[in-house]
Image (tube, rainbow, N blue to C red; front, side, top):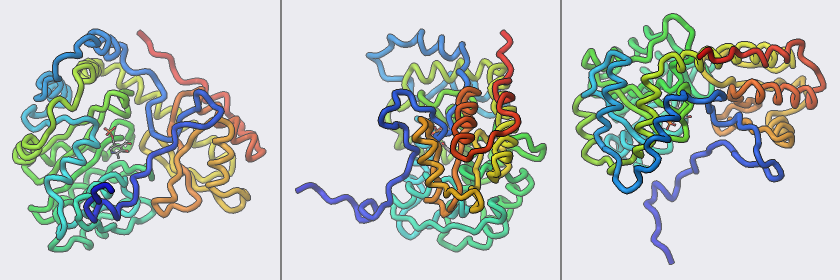
Length: 378
Ligand SMILES: Cc1ncc(COP(=O)(O)O)c(C=O)c1O
Protein backbone atom coordinates (compact mmCIF):
# COMPACT_ATOMS: atom_id res chain seq x y z
CA UNK A 1 0.00 0.00 0.00
CA UNK A 2 1.37 3.41 -0.92
CA UNK A 3 0.95 6.75 0.85
CA UNK A 4 -2.17 8.67 -0.16
CA UNK A 5 -1.49 12.11 -1.64
CA UNK A 6 -2.93 15.17 0.10
CA UNK A 7 -6.69 15.47 -0.43
CA UNK A 8 -6.26 18.50 -2.74
CA UNK A 9 -3.90 16.53 -4.97
CA UNK A 10 -6.03 13.37 -4.91
CA UNK A 11 -8.96 15.44 -6.20
CA UNK A 12 -6.88 17.17 -8.89
CA UNK A 13 -7.88 16.93 -12.54
CA UNK A 14 -4.63 16.20 -14.45
CA UNK A 15 -3.05 19.18 -16.22
CA UNK A 16 -3.59 18.43 -19.90
CA UNK A 17 -0.80 18.99 -22.41
CA UNK A 18 -0.97 18.45 -26.16
CA UNK A 19 -0.44 14.95 -27.58
CA UNK A 20 3.06 14.65 -29.05
CA UNK A 21 3.11 11.18 -30.61
CA UNK A 22 1.04 9.39 -33.25
CA UNK A 23 1.42 5.62 -33.64
CA UNK A 24 2.83 4.93 -37.11
CA UNK A 25 4.32 8.41 -37.58
CA UNK A 26 7.99 8.73 -36.66
CA UNK A 27 8.04 12.54 -36.87
CA UNK A 28 4.52 13.93 -36.58
CA UNK A 29 4.10 17.63 -37.33
CA UNK A 30 3.73 19.36 -33.95
CA UNK A 31 1.17 22.16 -34.11
CA UNK A 32 -0.20 21.57 -30.61
CA UNK A 33 2.27 23.10 -28.14
CA UNK A 34 2.94 26.61 -29.51
CA UNK A 35 6.59 25.95 -30.23
CA UNK A 36 8.51 28.16 -32.66
CA UNK A 37 8.49 26.80 -36.21
CA UNK A 38 11.81 28.46 -37.02
CA UNK A 39 15.33 27.67 -35.77
CA UNK A 40 16.71 29.45 -32.68
CA UNK A 41 19.59 31.90 -32.81
CA UNK A 42 22.79 30.28 -34.14
CA UNK A 43 24.58 32.18 -31.35
CA UNK A 44 22.40 30.39 -28.78
CA UNK A 45 23.13 27.02 -30.39
CA UNK A 46 26.89 27.75 -30.35
CA UNK A 47 26.72 28.73 -26.66
CA UNK A 48 24.88 25.50 -25.80
CA UNK A 49 27.48 23.46 -27.69
CA UNK A 50 30.34 25.34 -26.03
CA UNK A 51 29.05 24.39 -22.56
CA UNK A 52 28.05 20.81 -23.41
CA UNK A 53 30.92 19.34 -21.35
CA UNK A 54 30.04 21.25 -18.17
CA UNK A 55 28.30 18.32 -16.53
CA UNK A 56 29.97 17.76 -13.18
CA UNK A 57 29.17 21.09 -11.51
CA UNK A 58 25.76 22.50 -10.57
CA UNK A 59 24.71 25.49 -12.64
CA UNK A 60 25.21 28.96 -11.21
CA UNK A 61 21.96 29.54 -9.31
CA UNK A 62 21.86 33.34 -9.14
CA UNK A 63 21.66 33.54 -12.95
CA UNK A 64 23.88 36.63 -12.86
CA UNK A 65 24.82 36.73 -16.56
CA UNK A 66 21.30 36.04 -17.81
CA UNK A 67 19.73 38.62 -15.51
CA UNK A 68 22.31 41.21 -16.58
CA UNK A 69 21.66 40.47 -20.26
CA UNK A 70 17.87 40.75 -19.80
CA UNK A 71 18.20 43.94 -17.76
CA UNK A 72 20.38 45.50 -20.45
CA UNK A 73 18.16 44.42 -23.33
CA UNK A 74 14.88 45.54 -21.76
CA UNK A 75 16.08 48.51 -19.69
CA UNK A 76 15.15 46.80 -16.40
CA UNK A 77 16.64 46.48 -12.91
CA UNK A 78 18.52 43.15 -12.70
CA UNK A 79 17.71 42.90 -8.98
CA UNK A 80 14.03 42.55 -9.85
CA UNK A 81 14.59 39.73 -12.34
CA UNK A 82 14.26 36.13 -11.22
CA UNK A 83 14.73 33.16 -13.52
CA UNK A 84 13.22 29.70 -13.47
CA UNK A 85 13.12 26.39 -15.28
CA UNK A 86 10.52 27.73 -17.68
CA UNK A 87 7.99 30.28 -16.49
CA UNK A 88 6.06 27.20 -15.37
CA UNK A 89 8.54 26.75 -12.51
CA UNK A 90 7.95 30.34 -11.44
CA UNK A 91 4.17 29.77 -11.56
CA UNK A 92 4.63 26.74 -9.30
CA UNK A 93 6.79 28.81 -6.94
CA UNK A 94 4.27 31.67 -6.82
CA UNK A 95 1.48 29.22 -6.01
CA UNK A 96 3.56 27.49 -3.32
CA UNK A 97 4.58 30.77 -1.71
CA UNK A 98 1.33 32.71 -1.85
CA UNK A 99 -1.64 30.31 -2.14
CA UNK A 100 -3.18 27.90 0.35
CA UNK A 101 -6.55 26.68 1.53
CA UNK A 102 -8.72 29.69 2.41
CA UNK A 103 -7.06 31.91 -0.22
CA UNK A 104 -8.40 32.47 -3.72
CA UNK A 105 -6.77 32.76 -7.13
CA UNK A 106 -8.80 34.80 -9.61
CA UNK A 107 -8.43 34.07 -13.32
CA UNK A 108 -10.25 34.83 -16.54
CA UNK A 109 -12.78 32.30 -17.94
CA UNK A 110 -10.58 31.04 -20.79
CA UNK A 111 -7.25 31.89 -19.11
CA UNK A 112 -4.19 29.63 -19.41
CA UNK A 113 -4.88 26.67 -17.13
CA UNK A 114 -1.52 25.79 -15.57
CA UNK A 115 -1.86 28.35 -12.72
CA UNK A 116 -5.28 26.87 -11.93
CA UNK A 117 -3.77 23.41 -11.48
CA UNK A 118 -1.02 24.78 -9.26
CA UNK A 119 -3.49 26.74 -7.15
CA UNK A 120 -5.59 23.61 -6.70
CA UNK A 121 -2.49 21.67 -5.57
CA UNK A 122 -2.12 24.13 -2.69
CA UNK A 123 -5.79 23.75 -1.72
CA UNK A 124 -6.63 27.32 -2.75
CA UNK A 125 -9.95 28.14 -4.41
CA UNK A 126 -9.99 29.24 -8.04
CA UNK A 127 -12.56 31.71 -9.35
CA UNK A 128 -13.04 32.27 -13.08
CA UNK A 129 -14.39 35.68 -14.16
CA UNK A 130 -16.53 35.61 -17.33
CA UNK A 131 -15.03 36.91 -20.58
CA UNK A 132 -16.55 39.03 -23.30
CA UNK A 133 -15.93 38.02 -26.95
CA UNK A 134 -13.30 35.49 -25.82
CA UNK A 135 -11.35 38.35 -24.22
CA UNK A 136 -10.58 39.08 -20.57
CA UNK A 137 -13.12 41.54 -19.15
CA UNK A 138 -11.53 43.86 -16.58
CA UNK A 139 -14.87 44.87 -15.07
CA UNK A 140 -15.85 41.22 -14.58
CA UNK A 141 -12.44 40.48 -13.04
CA UNK A 142 -12.76 43.38 -10.60
CA UNK A 143 -16.33 42.40 -9.73
CA UNK A 144 -15.14 38.88 -8.84
CA UNK A 145 -12.59 40.03 -6.23
CA UNK A 146 -13.46 38.95 -2.66
CA UNK A 147 -11.65 39.41 0.67
CA UNK A 148 -10.12 35.94 0.07
CA UNK A 149 -8.57 36.92 -3.28
CA UNK A 150 -4.78 37.13 -2.91
CA UNK A 151 -3.67 36.67 -6.51
CA UNK A 152 -5.05 37.61 -9.94
CA UNK A 153 -3.54 35.80 -12.90
CA UNK A 154 -3.95 37.70 -16.17
CA UNK A 155 -2.53 36.25 -19.39
CA UNK A 156 -2.04 38.91 -22.04
CA UNK A 157 -2.25 37.97 -24.84
CA UNK A 158 -4.09 34.90 -23.66
CA UNK A 159 -3.54 31.23 -24.44
CA UNK A 160 -5.68 29.57 -25.92
CA UNK A 161 -7.81 32.46 -27.24
CA UNK A 162 -4.99 34.57 -28.73
CA UNK A 163 -6.82 37.76 -27.76
CA UNK A 164 -5.18 40.79 -26.15
CA UNK A 165 -6.02 43.77 -23.97
CA UNK A 166 -4.33 47.16 -24.37
CA UNK A 167 -2.03 48.17 -21.52
CA UNK A 168 -4.55 50.84 -20.47
CA UNK A 169 -6.93 48.01 -19.52
CA UNK A 170 -4.23 46.13 -17.59
CA UNK A 171 -3.42 49.34 -15.76
CA UNK A 172 -7.14 49.78 -14.98
CA UNK A 173 -7.16 46.24 -13.57
CA UNK A 174 -4.11 46.98 -11.40
CA UNK A 175 -5.56 50.28 -10.14
CA UNK A 176 -8.90 48.62 -9.35
CA UNK A 177 -7.37 45.78 -7.32
CA UNK A 178 -6.57 46.17 -3.64
CA UNK A 179 -2.85 46.91 -3.19
CA UNK A 180 -2.26 43.65 -1.31
CA UNK A 181 -3.66 41.51 -4.17
CA UNK A 182 -0.81 40.31 -6.38
CA UNK A 183 -1.36 40.78 -10.11
CA UNK A 184 0.56 38.17 -12.11
CA UNK A 185 0.74 39.33 -15.69
CA UNK A 186 1.82 36.48 -17.99
CA UNK A 187 3.27 38.01 -21.15
CA UNK A 188 4.60 34.74 -22.64
CA UNK A 189 3.43 35.71 -26.14
CA UNK A 190 4.08 39.45 -25.81
CA UNK A 191 6.64 39.53 -28.64
CA UNK A 192 3.99 38.51 -31.20
CA UNK A 193 1.60 41.39 -30.49
CA UNK A 194 1.13 44.04 -33.16
CA UNK A 195 -1.60 46.09 -31.41
CA UNK A 196 0.00 49.49 -30.75
CA UNK A 197 -1.58 49.89 -27.30
CA UNK A 198 0.08 46.75 -25.95
CA UNK A 199 2.87 46.56 -23.36
CA UNK A 200 4.33 43.55 -21.58
CA UNK A 201 3.85 45.43 -18.30
CA UNK A 202 7.21 45.68 -16.51
CA UNK A 203 6.42 49.38 -15.91
CA UNK A 204 3.91 48.32 -13.25
CA UNK A 205 6.74 46.66 -11.30
CA UNK A 206 9.02 49.68 -11.67
CA UNK A 207 6.15 51.85 -10.38
CA UNK A 208 6.23 49.86 -7.15
CA UNK A 209 2.90 48.06 -7.52
CA UNK A 210 2.25 44.50 -6.33
CA UNK A 211 2.71 43.05 -9.82
CA UNK A 212 4.76 40.17 -11.22
CA UNK A 213 5.39 39.95 -14.98
CA UNK A 214 6.22 36.56 -16.52
CA UNK A 215 8.25 36.09 -19.71
CA UNK A 216 9.68 33.03 -21.45
CA UNK A 217 12.39 31.77 -23.79
CA UNK A 218 10.04 29.03 -25.05
CA UNK A 219 8.17 31.04 -27.67
CA UNK A 220 9.81 33.74 -29.83
CA UNK A 221 13.33 32.60 -28.87
CA UNK A 222 12.63 29.04 -30.02
CA UNK A 223 14.31 27.57 -26.92
CA UNK A 224 11.45 25.61 -25.34
CA UNK A 225 13.71 22.57 -24.87
CA UNK A 226 16.01 24.58 -22.59
CA UNK A 227 13.21 25.39 -20.08
CA UNK A 228 14.07 28.99 -19.25
CA UNK A 229 11.59 31.60 -18.09
CA UNK A 230 11.90 34.79 -16.08
CA UNK A 231 9.89 37.14 -13.97
CA UNK A 232 10.10 40.84 -13.22
CA UNK A 233 8.95 41.21 -9.64
CA UNK A 234 9.07 43.37 -6.51
CA UNK A 235 11.96 42.87 -4.03
CA UNK A 236 9.96 40.87 -1.53
CA UNK A 237 8.67 38.42 -4.17
CA UNK A 238 12.24 37.86 -5.43
CA UNK A 239 13.42 37.30 -1.84
CA UNK A 240 10.51 35.00 -0.98
CA UNK A 241 11.04 32.71 -3.97
CA UNK A 242 14.82 32.71 -3.37
CA UNK A 243 14.11 31.05 -0.01
CA UNK A 244 12.65 27.90 -1.60
CA UNK A 245 14.36 27.71 -5.01
CA UNK A 246 16.08 24.40 -5.82
CA UNK A 247 19.77 24.45 -6.68
CA UNK A 248 20.62 24.82 -10.35
CA UNK A 249 17.15 24.24 -11.81
CA UNK A 250 18.27 25.95 -15.02
CA UNK A 251 21.14 23.88 -16.43
CA UNK A 252 24.43 25.59 -17.37
CA UNK A 253 23.81 24.86 -21.06
CA UNK A 254 20.36 26.44 -20.90
CA UNK A 255 21.67 29.54 -19.13
CA UNK A 256 24.39 29.93 -21.77
CA UNK A 257 21.96 29.46 -24.65
CA UNK A 258 19.38 31.88 -23.26
CA UNK A 259 21.98 34.53 -22.48
CA UNK A 260 23.39 34.31 -26.02
CA UNK A 261 19.86 34.52 -27.45
CA UNK A 262 19.19 37.78 -25.59
CA UNK A 263 22.32 39.15 -27.23
CA UNK A 264 20.99 38.36 -30.73
CA UNK A 265 18.03 40.74 -31.08
CA UNK A 266 18.12 40.61 -34.91
CA UNK A 267 17.29 36.94 -34.75
CA UNK A 268 14.41 37.56 -32.35
CA UNK A 269 12.99 40.17 -34.71
CA UNK A 270 13.39 37.79 -37.65
CA UNK A 271 11.54 35.00 -35.80
CA UNK A 272 8.78 37.36 -34.69
CA UNK A 273 8.26 38.75 -38.21
CA UNK A 274 8.15 35.25 -39.70
CA UNK A 275 5.53 34.08 -37.20
CA UNK A 276 3.37 37.17 -37.62
CA UNK A 277 3.53 36.96 -41.42
CA UNK A 278 2.65 33.28 -41.44
CA UNK A 279 -0.09 33.83 -38.85
CA UNK A 280 -1.82 36.41 -41.01
CA UNK A 281 -1.55 34.33 -44.19
CA UNK A 282 -2.77 31.18 -42.45
CA UNK A 283 -5.65 33.12 -40.88
CA UNK A 284 -6.85 34.00 -44.40
CA UNK A 285 -6.43 30.38 -45.49
CA UNK A 286 -8.54 29.12 -42.58
CA UNK A 287 -11.36 31.46 -43.56
CA UNK A 288 -11.27 30.13 -47.11
CA UNK A 289 -12.04 26.70 -45.69
CA UNK A 290 -15.16 28.10 -44.03
CA UNK A 291 -13.50 27.79 -40.61
CA UNK A 292 -13.84 30.71 -38.18
CA UNK A 293 -10.43 31.72 -36.79
CA UNK A 294 -10.31 34.14 -33.86
CA UNK A 295 -8.01 37.08 -34.68
CA UNK A 296 -4.76 36.27 -32.88
CA UNK A 297 -1.95 38.33 -31.38
CA UNK A 298 0.09 35.24 -30.54
CA UNK A 299 1.93 32.35 -32.22
CA UNK A 300 -1.24 30.25 -32.52
CA UNK A 301 -4.81 30.64 -33.71
CA UNK A 302 -7.98 29.49 -31.96
CA UNK A 303 -10.43 28.23 -34.57
CA UNK A 304 -14.18 27.75 -34.31
CA UNK A 305 -15.44 24.81 -36.35
CA UNK A 306 -18.96 25.86 -37.41
CA UNK A 307 -21.76 23.30 -37.57
CA UNK A 308 -22.41 23.85 -41.28
CA UNK A 309 -19.06 22.24 -42.16
CA UNK A 310 -20.57 18.95 -41.01
CA UNK A 311 -17.55 17.95 -38.93
CA UNK A 312 -17.04 18.58 -35.21
CA UNK A 313 -13.78 19.80 -33.69
CA UNK A 314 -12.95 16.35 -32.27
CA UNK A 315 -13.50 14.64 -35.62
CA UNK A 316 -11.40 17.30 -37.32
CA UNK A 317 -8.66 16.79 -34.71
CA UNK A 318 -8.70 13.03 -35.37
CA UNK A 319 -8.73 13.41 -39.17
CA UNK A 320 -5.77 15.79 -39.04
CA UNK A 321 -3.98 13.45 -36.62
CA UNK A 322 -4.54 10.53 -38.98
CA UNK A 323 -2.51 12.54 -41.52
CA UNK A 324 0.44 12.93 -39.12
CA UNK A 325 -0.34 16.37 -37.71
CA UNK A 326 -1.05 17.20 -34.06
CA UNK A 327 -3.23 20.17 -33.07
CA UNK A 328 -4.55 21.08 -29.61
CA UNK A 329 -7.97 20.25 -28.22
CA UNK A 330 -9.49 22.99 -26.05
CA UNK A 331 -12.75 21.44 -24.87
CA UNK A 332 -11.30 21.35 -21.32
CA UNK A 333 -11.71 25.16 -21.39
CA UNK A 334 -15.40 24.78 -22.25
CA UNK A 335 -14.53 25.89 -25.78
CA UNK A 336 -16.67 23.36 -27.59
CA UNK A 337 -16.20 23.04 -31.34
CA UNK A 338 -12.95 24.97 -31.17
CA UNK A 339 -9.43 23.81 -31.87
CA UNK A 340 -6.07 25.55 -31.37
CA UNK A 341 -3.46 25.57 -34.11
CA UNK A 342 0.13 26.64 -33.46
CA UNK A 343 1.90 28.64 -36.15
CA UNK A 344 4.70 26.22 -36.96
CA UNK A 345 7.13 26.08 -39.86
CA UNK A 346 6.04 27.11 -43.38
CA UNK A 347 6.26 23.42 -44.37
CA UNK A 348 4.11 22.41 -41.42
CA UNK A 349 1.43 24.97 -42.25
CA UNK A 350 1.49 23.89 -45.90
CA UNK A 351 1.05 20.26 -44.82
CA UNK A 352 -1.90 21.24 -42.63
CA UNK A 353 -3.42 23.19 -45.52
CA UNK A 354 -3.13 20.07 -47.66
CA UNK A 355 -4.70 17.93 -44.91
CA UNK A 356 -7.59 20.38 -44.48
CA UNK A 357 -8.13 20.39 -48.24
CA UNK A 358 -8.35 16.62 -48.14
CA UNK A 359 -10.69 16.55 -45.13
CA UNK A 360 -12.95 19.49 -45.92
CA UNK A 361 -12.86 19.00 -49.66
CA UNK A 362 -12.20 22.60 -50.54
CA UNK A 363 -8.93 24.03 -51.82
CA UNK A 364 -7.97 27.49 -50.57
CA UNK A 365 -6.85 29.98 -53.17
CA UNK A 366 -3.49 30.80 -51.66
CA UNK A 367 -1.67 27.81 -50.07
CA UNK A 368 1.47 28.63 -52.04
CA UNK A 369 1.79 31.89 -50.14
CA UNK A 370 2.47 29.90 -47.01
CA UNK A 371 5.89 29.03 -48.41
CA UNK A 372 6.94 32.64 -48.74
CA UNK A 373 8.38 33.32 -45.28
CA UNK A 374 11.51 35.43 -45.74
CA UNK A 375 14.93 33.86 -45.37
CA UNK A 376 17.20 35.00 -42.55
CA UNK A 377 19.58 37.57 -44.00
CA UNK A 378 22.97 36.93 -42.41
C1 LIG B 1 0.51 31.67 -21.29
C2 LIG B 1 1.65 30.76 -21.00
N1 LIG B 1 2.41 30.97 -19.93
C3 LIG B 1 3.45 30.17 -19.63
C4 LIG B 1 3.77 29.10 -20.43
C5 LIG B 1 4.90 28.20 -20.02
O1 LIG B 1 6.07 28.64 -20.57
P1 LIG B 1 7.47 28.01 -20.18
O2 LIG B 1 7.87 27.14 -21.32
O3 LIG B 1 8.37 29.21 -20.00
O4 LIG B 1 7.34 27.24 -18.90
C6 LIG B 1 3.02 28.84 -21.57
C7 LIG B 1 3.36 27.69 -22.44
O5 LIG B 1 2.74 27.35 -23.38
C8 LIG B 1 1.92 29.68 -21.87
O6 LIG B 1 1.15 29.45 -22.93
